[in-house]
Image (cartoon, rainbow, N blue to C red; front, side):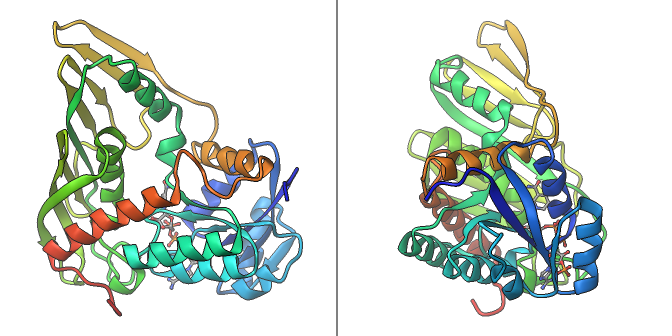
Length: 327
Ligand SMILES: NC(=O)c1ccc[n+]([C@@H]2O[C@H](COP(=O)([O-])OP(=O)(O)OC[C@H]3O[C@@H](n4cnc5c(N)ncnc54)[C@H](OP(=O)(O)O)[C@@H]3O)[C@@H](O)[C@H]2O)c1
């Protein structure tokens, strides 16, 4: 079945869900028809703010709404598997926020369920769909820096420790690695493929999750050096160095509005990669394209890539000594 206008249901009306709703306003082919919160009051508040007709105080009720074709899972990491599986079992297509799950085992179950049910599922790794990342892919393909050999990337802020907040609560999948480290890790994977081994070290805070992480990713043909932090302000930049030059991604490296290409000889080209509207629009457009074409996976962000990224995060987290409840 292909869809002309996708009816979206939003689960978890928090910070990113609000951006998703803003982005939907500039995208063709879809509209948000329902929102579910753990509180009907908050569902109404979100519904009023964005003009959404269906408001539910329970995710199950949202899934019973026949106007909902696709679900945007915008809850904390610890809820991604349950919220995704519920939507998939109800026959809905799903766009699930990053990090895709708490671990690779959950990611595999999510992928298997979607494939078995024949519905679309994709991790909302928005960077991959942004103009700068599409341009980066083209530059690498053209061989502008020769063979890419080293990726250095970091992403971090200093935020106050708040034990209940999703960044710090183990039950919600807190920690710098899953929340922010996913971006440098996915850049390494995009440029160099899957790493063969990883080495990680970091600082685990009082709530039991990682607050500062460093990682060395050993790929078949290159190295990735990454940092992520919730307790240290980092530059949030990236550099991809190759045999014939390098490409700089300025802050923020997960959504840069320009790229700089420097040839080994020293000439520099500045490339403007700015876009209009909220950057989440590009991942939404990808979902719409896939659904219109009857595809159940994105070629840009396939499920096997999400699983592979979770495997890297698992391996790093094991070395940091961070485990989530139930693991
Ligand atoms: N793409 C990006 O740029 C980007 C940016 C930020 C975050 N994210 C991702 O988006 C997801 C959500 O992040 P966020 O910043 O939007 O978080 P948030 O503001 O805390 O919102 C998450 C919402 O999920 C709901 N929720 C359901 N179960 C929950 C639970 N057990 N504890 C807390 N909240 C629960 C809450 O809504 P109710 O209480 O109303 O149900 C909450 O408002 C994460 O996966 C995060 O990594 C992506």
